[in-house]
Image (cartoon, rainbow, N blue to C red; front, side, top):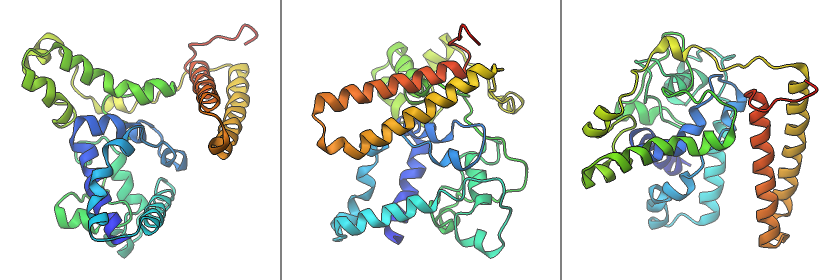
Length: 273
């Protein structure tokens, strides 16, 4: 568990310091609310990008089952720290990743960005200079706000600016650097041609909350419960399904959740609403 948490710290840090890793990890940070549901927003591509960080555990001989158990414990531990209802915990905050420490991690305040990466232990942050104590109100989300409930936009949207900048920049070195430089870095020629507005904390405090009718709320709720149930059933039986059946059900689920996002964003209007 100590080994897993140590390497998880470095993966988590890379997810904030490299643009392509951030594009995957930003899904976890997009929520402007900070509660247990935030913990369930999981990354899209980190399984494909982050495996190399754990290779040293294989080299020293950690059995796969112990690796899996350690990873599960570290992951499950992090669920309870996504809350605003637990204040500071004294000595616990100095050793473990706690709600107070993790609120800082999810905040976009200038003094809080890219801090407190520890999954279970905050000791790593104290050792490697990335710790910051909570001392002002946290404003949550990402510096480029999602402002949508569309799951496809949440997962795929962060890659779009990287693709656009890589396409438009003239230097081949910059076409590659776009993906691995820190998030927000842009080639000079692209930044000059396509300037972006600077980050504003005041704008970040504006919560995306479209006005919905009762019919829209009821429709989104009923469909969400239904599609979650279908997805759980699909995952339970996935090993027994033919590939084409699994892909068809996956496509249906993605379409269903996309439609729910459209209702919540008021992009999909109901005639009887």
